[in-house]
Length: 237
Image 1 (cartoon, rainbow, N blue to C red):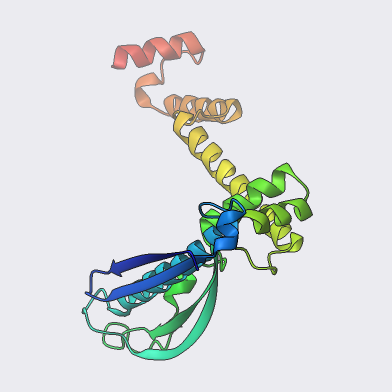
Image 2 (cartoon, rainbow, N blue to C red):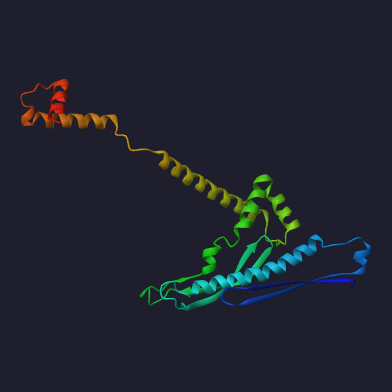
């Protein structure tokens, strides 16, 4: 071994919990003499996969612990169970602990409901960055080539096939379509002024007003022509 690199990452959350991770990269003399200087793509994959595992695990535990506290009474919720969940990221898939908390019985009596915090922040089992990146590549090239490009430069598992690329591309496209529709409706509602009464409705209202005016004692002596009626209403004001 000619050179050994040690990369250390440390994290601390608001609750005081700490995380420590070390990654070692060793390089032999043969690699140096062959001109392999610096970090290679494989070295970068190894480093980023290890660091991402530590970061995602620590952040998932922090989010779950924060959601365990009831926002109303500030008491820890009861534990339903502990499972595991695979979260797919740009720098690899991370297997994290996925707890489920029960609703507070003091604040919600009679409601036996459990929820998983990771299901709320990661409903697609993949980060939004990976979803957008996959959809972007899937829209510019065939799905198989997009899956090959992802596995070539990123620490992606072989399970990221062309079927996964196709599924994410379609899902992101549907969300963009829904977003465009909502923005269009908001823009139309802002530009829309006071509601204009239809012509047929205005005619009916005029007829009703005409009949009401005819039944008024002050207008009993006036002619029922529109000009006489308008002048009579003006004199009354």
